[in-house]
Length: 254
Image (cartoon, rainbow, N blue to C red; front, side, top):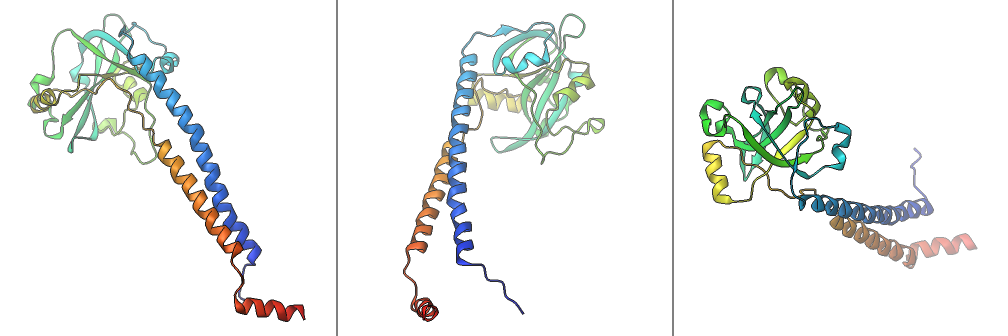
């Protein structure tokens, strides 16, 4: 039987690709870090501006220019069209995000409001009357672009009342709303949060940018891997030949 044995040159070429590839990936992460830093700075600059009144009609194509912009809107919460997205964890507890259409004056002015998190045990509305405000309310929150579903999240099943991620377009069609997503905000307060959780009042998010920015860690990882494998490759190339390899080489020269 013929046993395949890669040549030393082929092994060295493959080994050399590892530090080169790691260096390229590290450099790519440097550019990603610059892009993410600028993006976070842009969103944080929007957060410090005073809240805008939400206009009756919103062009979905313009939402990207107002992502993380603070807004407020007045209307009536349609609790009869409430949708629960879950499961979602909050401080180690299982629960749901409460999404409720906000019906405003005029035809076609309804928008979707992510009111915040509630405990799983208070899923049924009958158990959280305090969390269902009646009459006219003012909602203040962040205008956000529609979320993007990842490949690991199952599809929503609205016919069963099961939602696993906020498909804004789908939810807007179900409720006759505009495909506009507002995340209601509240000041971080642990005592107030405990009180709201006990009463079934949704715990809103803080008015802050929550984008993940781990690119510095990735830069260090890839560059460290590139440096380590470069040193290892150099040690292999510079290593003196063994006695057996030296004898074989001498025999071939005779």
